[in-house]
Image (cartoon, rainbow, N blue to C red):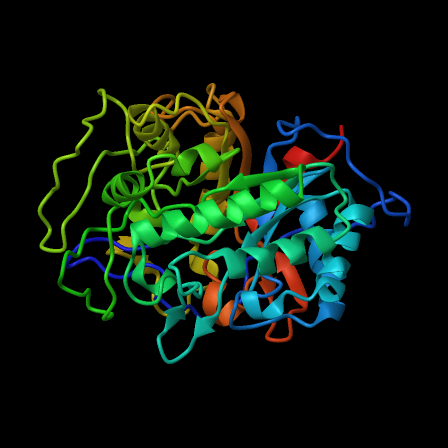
Length: 421
C-alpha cells in the first residue's frame, strides 16, 4: 500500500525477524478424521473468520512438507470451515501440486479461496501484467486459469476465485495501472470461469484505498499509481458492464496509518502525488469513509453510483503491523507500530465492538465486522509469510526454514474466538 508524496511506500518496507513475544498458545491436534470432507456451507456461511496464507508469496515458497503444520495453525485460528486464501502464480498452475492444498483444506475443514496471480519479475520489482492476446483480450490466459481451477477437487461446494491483486498499483500491473485492461481481463476470466464452473464465485482484485494518483509522474519507486476511485471510474468507462461479472465484492479494508491505528479512526481522503486532495466524482454522505476498517462502505457507495445496488463483501486483506518482528524500524509512515498485544485488542474491537470491555478505548466510530450483515468474511493478512518480508504482519513467528516458533498475540485472539465452547 502507498500514501502520497512525503509518505513512504508501505509494502516496500522490508522487515527483519527478531525474538517474538512470549505466548502460551501451542498447536493442538484437531480430531476431525482423515477422510476428505465436502462442506455444504452456503455462500454466506456463519463463520466469517479467515487468514491469508503465504505458502508461496510469488517470490519465496515454503517447502510442501511445511504446509500441513501451517494449515493446522490456520485451522486453529479460524475454526470450522473458516477461510484461507492462497495466491497461485500463472507459472505454477500445477493441479497435482495444489491438490495437496485442497486436500489439507478438506481434512482440516477450511474454506479455500484462490487468488489468481501472474509472475513476479525481480528486475521489474513487481508483478507483470497478464499476457494479452493479439486482439487485446485475455481469453488465452483466462482459459489457462480455468483449466487449472476446474482440474482441482475442491472441499467446498462454492469455489471462491479472486482475479488479480491491487491493480491500481503499478507494481501489480507491470509498472503502470491500466483500468481498461484490467476490466477486460476481469471480464474474460470471469466469463470463462462462470461458463466452465457453475460453482465459481468471482471476486474482483482488492483495490488499495491509500494509493494516490501519480498522474504522469512516477513515484519514488519508479512506478505509477492510481487512486481507487479513478481506477473504478475508468474501468466502468471502458467496460460499463464489468462489475456485473462479480458475485462478491473484494475489499482491502486496512486500518488507518496505514496498519497502525485503532478501528475508531477512519477518514475519507483521495491524494495526488503532490499531496493535494482530489475532489471525489461522487461525494460520499457524511461519516462514509474510504480509509479505515469500514472502507468497503464507500466502495459499495461507488458501485451503487454505477447502478449496481448490492454485492456481499469479503474482506480478503486487513490487519495491523506489530513491533515484535520489525527489526530496527518500528514505524510505518512516521507512526510508531503497536505491540502485538495492542493489535489483538484492535482486532477484537474491529470484530465485535467494545460494549464496555475496554473502558479506556472508544465505543463508537466503526461498524464491527461480525455485526455487519453485508460482510461474509474477514481475512487477516497474513499467517505465515517469510519473516524477512512479512514478519511485521505475520500472526506466527517463523524461522528461515518455515518452522513455527510460536504464535503472536493476534493469533491467540483469533484462536480464542474460534475455539469451540
